[in-house]
Structures are given as C-alpha cells and as structure tokens.
Amino acid sequence: MNLLIIFIIYLIFAPVIGGIVTGVDRKITARMQRRYGPPIMQPFYDVYKLFQKENMVVRRSQNVYIFFYLLFIVFTGALFFTGEDFLLVIFSLTLAAIFFILAGYKGSSPYSYIGAERELLQLMSYEPMVILTAVGMYMVTKTFYIANIIAFPEPLIIYLPGIFVGFAYVLTIKLRKSPFDLSTSHHGHQEIVKGITTEFSGSALGLIEIAHWYEVAFLIGFIYLFYAVTPVIGILLVLAVYFLEIFIDNVFARLRWQYTLSSSWIIAIILGLGNIIALTIFR
Image 1 (cartoon, rainbow, N blue to C red):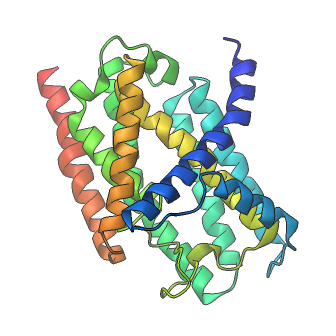
Image 2: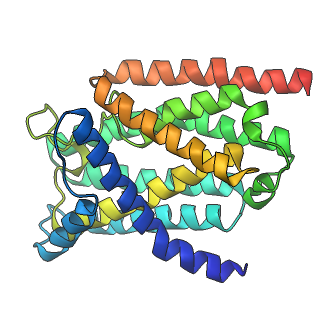
Image 3: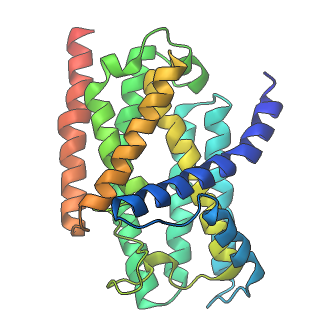
C-alpha cells in the first residue's frame, strides 16, 4: 500500500482507536470498582468540551511545547506504522516526552513542577527497556526497519520472552497507570492534584489528551510486533496485555519514585539484558 495512504489512514484512525481504547479502559475500570461507569465514547465528549472552553495558561510558551509534544507523538506513530527505522521511532518518542516535560516546567506551579520532575524520572525508568527491546528485535530479525520486523516469519516472542515481560512492565509507566502514575493524578484529592497537567486547560489540555490517544495506538502496535506473524494471535496478545495493565492499575496503589526507577532498571538488566546475552550465546 502506498505510504501516503497508510499515513492518512493512521492520521485519521489512530486517535479514534486510542480514544475508544481509553473509553473501554474507563468502562472496565468502573466495572472492576462495581460502578456503571461512563459511556465508551465519553473521552471524545470530554475533549470536545475542552475545546469549547477558554485556554487559560500561565505562559503562552506552554502551548508551543504542547504543540510540539503532539507533533512528535504523531510523527512517532507515523514512522512506526509506515514501517520506518525503529531507532528513529524511539528518538522521536523521547523528543516528544522532553517537550511535554518542558511544558510542565513552564507552568511555574509547584504541582506542575513536581509533575515534570516525576515525568523526567519516568522517562529515565522506561527508556533503557525500550532501547533493549529494539536491540533484541534487531538481533533476531537483523533489521531495524519495522516493515521487515513485521515480515519476519516467526513470532518474536519465542526469542524475546524476557524482553516481552520487561516491556510489559515499563508499559505501565508509559501508560501512566498505577503503581507508576507518578507524574499525573486523576483524582483531585491526591497529593499532586493533576501533576504535570495542573496548569493546562481548554484546548491545550484537549491536545494533551489527543496526544495520549495517538500514543496508546502506537504502544498497541509496539505490543503487536511480538506476534505479528499471526495477526489474530497478535491482536489477542494486545488485548491480553492491555487488560492486564487495567487490572494492575486497579489493584496496586501508587509507589514511590525510588521504587519505580530502581525496579525498572533491575527488570531491564535481568530480563532485557539477560535475554540479549542468551540470544548472543544460543543463537
């Protein structure tokens, strides 16, 4: 399929899929807590309402950083779904996270500042495992190009079980779910209020939510890579992992940042690096 057509399909459908997944997430979460929960389309209603409200910001430059955050998240997904270089995808994803952190620092609020600091710690926590995942996939497929990785004739999870578990672990951080939702909070009574997004409102907050939808679509695609050889099993794997993330989110309370950082690196060393060493020896 022409790359331009794939890009247009991604541009239109990625936020739709991300928004629906977020709505299903909220619905399942509510049922786990014995509540009825909002309708699945509620995230779209929320974003629509945000764009109807006045955009109040402490500094206008915050909006610029959020624009580039959304731009690089979209660019990351575009590279990924058009089958481009994995390393470029990771670089673009990291750059998007940096723009988000800068926007949090610009808020000049203690809540926003603490949220930005914690977002930075989260970036330091998950980044080693993400890089090891790319390295592991390269060692199995001998390519960094996503299109070639998808075309690999065997399931990658067979060769990368440790890396798969390690990536699922840091995925909780990337999705900002408990016990690692350090930088944001969805409940007003908690100690960091809304964390890094405290000083955003209106359309800026709507853009952050849309960026999250694009990111969810990208992360779903990332999980799918581990069993891309059989699309049906790949989709089932994505559903199982995402349901596990929702379950963990509802079972565990938030942990301290020290545990997030140390446990992520230990997981990356034992499961990620251990898997790569095993590949080097036995493959």
